[in-house]
Length: 200
Image (cartoon, rainbow, N blue to C red):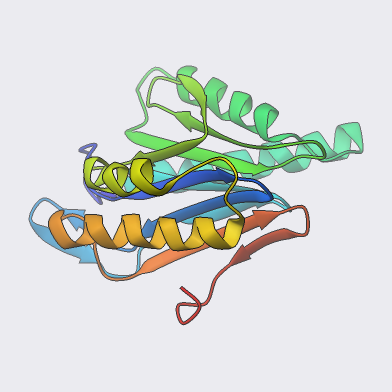
């Protein structure tokens, strides 16, 4: 995640598991060669069982998180039921694709509905693809090496946490824009939980 206006930096991961979704990121925010922050928050709760990770411009990402939180609350008020993961991703896709200037971000939205778990990857132009596992940011090629080797669709969220942590740690070892600790969220039908660092 960058404090400037370039789209690079960061490593985030997302995995669909048998009993939920795992989202994770490291904590470094860079501005060119400068480490602008060692405590950047890149994993957010959007709804009770929906979360989001972000790579790219800090300002753009924070604005988008505020917007999608407001939109999902309005959806719930109007329809008297929670929004689905797919509908949240479609809303965000419309926001990304509807502006004059692009947002310099790559987002992963994931969560659990009544009948299934899912993650969606969104690009700066509003493209939206459903995936089973993903990684974004400059450290993603390294993270993918771990994810592709260890992931299968039958893993539990606890196993997914282990795989996500290993993928992020590998990226932090080799990508200079990734570092300074890990945040991982478990999302199940019981809710959204950011894990304590000691648990990770």
